[in-house]
Length: 70
Length: 541
Image (cartoon, rainbow over all chains, first blue to last red):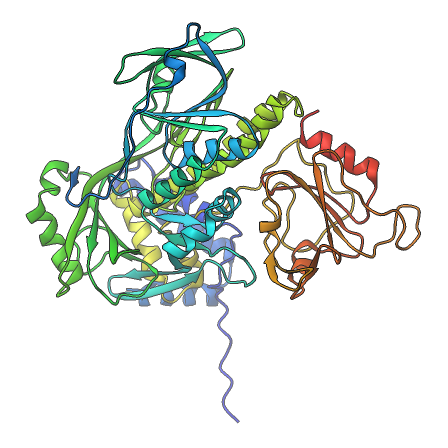
């Protein structure tokens, strides 16, 4: 019997019914911001969304995925 | 612009009897601008037996590299106008798009994943071939008079129409019209003469378009690169056209100098990197920027704006000329109905609301695609590049990658539709073009649904229903004034089950279809009074 690996919990399938508008919302959030202001915004967003997810395992998988994507 | 290799069809100026008339002649409809949109409008009106004069300031077609991608809905319209099969035979049929990041394929997409449509998802065909086919068709239609080198220079409003001043090689003349249709393009003279504002967003990025002729075995698909290895800019697009001509579109950035970038040596240096060892000839080169904008209203009393004269988008998504031809089909039947006294004047207002809805949809898609391709700042670019970096491993990111969402027809929210009283499954939608489906004629030959709907209102009825009085096979459906009846199971026959599935056609189901093939009402059974009411509603009466 092959060993059953624990299921990845992170959802990478598209969840927005309209991905273009979701992307546009993120673009518009940073429109007219300086680089530093945009970086600060993104950092706050990470914290807010990480808390919303509220699952350490998902957070770790997300960090691994982000680091692996070159 | 540099026109290196010309393909031109010339037409002679002819003096019109209107120029010699003692009093100013009045015509029901004058269309200004013999591009694809003006030609389609004039042909469609002529097919509705409306006399129409089409004027154009030029005496030729065929210069330049403009629209190349013609969408399925546009082809269905052109098929109704009588040239669809010819164009498909002449064009390059494609439906597969591929998106790359550098040399890596991110994903591919199929634009027509289902079978059983007469027309393909897209064909590529040089705009001058389309215009040539439209001119040939226009010349066959007698209510249509095409006047080359007749240039609109003046426009005065009358109480019930417009008075035009038209300049010709023989000097100017005047012409009155009940309606003027302004299909005179992005730099519309009619728009200027009325002093209308044409505001919107101009994008700073410059793009190089090169059409090259070469014998190459690249696949027949739309290929789009973000950060290509062969071009220092942000994106590149490659597309096949007939005659071994390939469209190459390279993003140059906001600081590119349009004059320098069109120098042949410079263009060749860029193209050599794209095409590697393939020998090629330059057909056409231009550098362009683009706008997303529209008029506030398309209908200004007796002057109606259509196509690029009314709205402009970026070329990514094939939404310019395609939407203009869809404007044409929306307007033609309505104007014909109003001129014949069959339609209420609100029908013209519905052109305004339906096509503004379509224009806003197109401008929205076009703006979002352009935002993705041309980020406005380092912060936006970083977000965009993160989406591209995640795309190979995360599906949600692939869905955000936007190299142009290709043109689909709008679904009109419109008072011309009669709301459903029972739910319908399937892909047919109120306010949308009817989906095509394979059928068989009584003689056994193969046909498709849409090619049997040619210009008037159509009532489509699936046989063997239960009538309103509850008797199986009871009240037979019948045609009305101006509504042709097609019974599936008597006139045409189901071939593969797709008609039944796409229209959710249970026995007795009845569909009222507008002359532009848009579904405007449907029921589970036929009832004469109900159908008549829906027909009147669709005519804004």
